Image 1: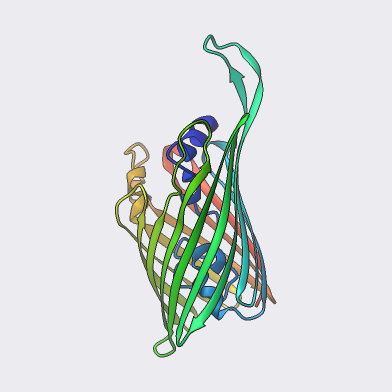
Image 2 (image 1 turned 135 degrees about the horizontal axis):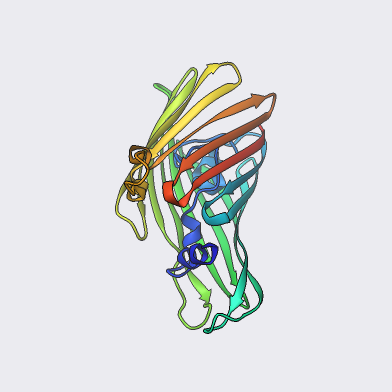
Length: 283
């Protein structure tokens, strides 16, 4: 099963890049700012970054696979690294004979810069992508661009991000693939104890999707958060009786001084579930 997941994530061109390993924003990404994750979601958010942020995230994904994320933002500059580990699998020939093992590893590294033009935040990022399956590897390059505007009254933020515009520069074997572009248009309404957001998303290989979600602090230093995406409605199998939860992500955040710890869970039913943990320091 891990090999199947790895093949699905790479067969149509760097598709692992469509997976979000970060718990903090519960998948509502393009309009939030000031939390250390703008390099990953929308480089325009860096135009409003004050101070420094260090972040790390882990996603225990389906079929025993794993994602990792590291980020650093200082002022209007940011660096982000995402990593996929498909584990170790047995090598077999066409007759089922085993002869060793091999691994599956994908990684992308991005650098981004934000700046302000009049009252609008703008941003651009560049990234390099490396994918390795056994003795084969491929390389790709891409860019992210974004814009973000903040209405101070009534505390609404609107963001637009176009991510993963790029191509393969070295194929696994013969055919060079394109990166899985993604369009995001989102809005966030902030409240004294939380926020609510809506994103419209158009991934490369899917139709237009809707994401809604938010966070609310019932007590100081503790938030509950949740989101729903229509893009995962196809996960419904009818076997569990819980199909109404398809596309849901839910979790919480704990704040301690300058440290924030987030945990979220996404049910994938027959495929398992996604456990995300994020920790960031800054502010």
